[in-house]
Length: 436
Image (cartoon, rainbow, N blue to C red; front, side, top):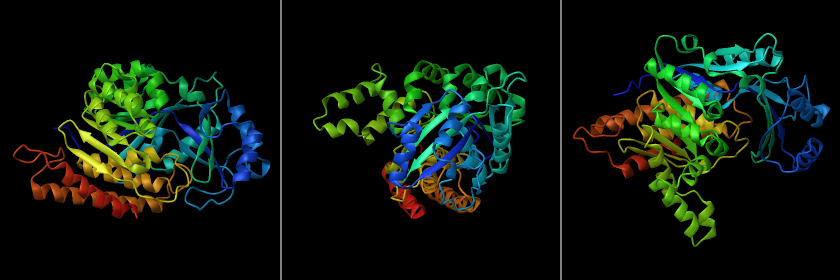
């Protein structure tokens, strides 16, 4: 069996400094979008330079800008003003922050590349303050490219309009990966964000180094555009057996199936979309769709998870053990980093030997907390609260399985699998209690 004990988790991705502007008033939001030249709010688009980020910030109004994005309040303080706040972001870095701050026996390090500028130095300092060891390479001395930044305009209800400059982070290539410095003696898991698939050689190199050291590898698909644009690289990496745990949201899972007419799962999904009598059914990602997506994913990995937004998540391992966690209705402030928080909760439980059911419940508990705050950074007090929640889920899961003679893979001592319905009901009650 694989080593499922806590230990070092290493993240690989783009070190993006998040600049968050909260637009609670609808009229204010319209004026800001007009000043920024944004005709269609929502979504994420790239910009060409750091100067574009600063121009958009200036367009938001001088009353919101203090030092071009330097915060006037810390992440642990309530922020009610419209002044921008700043935190170290990027998908894999967010996962590492969550794993480190849940403090369930896991240490975390994050690998990426920054520029030789104040933005990069500030990112490194603030990431370390979140209990993550920065393994951040810097660009060449003669390269003046700026560190990555993302301006996120957040409306009431949580809709985000993002403009991103990846800058120095894109300079990192496969030969740059600092395996010895990142992994040390005995890493437990490498977590790779899907955006790294735009540089498949880098993703493969990191995954190979992790495997050579006995570590597991998890991959979060990041966005449906990544799945669409990087399908060949993704399939090649999966076919080579580099990935143990694969995470997708419903849009990414749908794109996996939509783009594959050769597999049974892909054909079934496409047929449901083309023959549905109810037009609404064609747009809704159903549990049947999620099951097909997980079966597709499990052709290439050992653990597959599909998050369903406000509807919760489903998870399954290759042995057939399943996890189902429903969502909980809460006031949504900002969905930034909610998926990463989910992944952090799932992996923290997983590395403590939990079943797919407990991992799903832990992930949903942490993700639910993340949508109730601005940005992708919870307070240390909230992390302490979530640590107790996730630990309780893991401990109840262990008691549940010991009482029935089952292991983390969901198999009974006589070889039969524990009841899916029983596990789902157990997880639903746990999630309802932790999400209240």
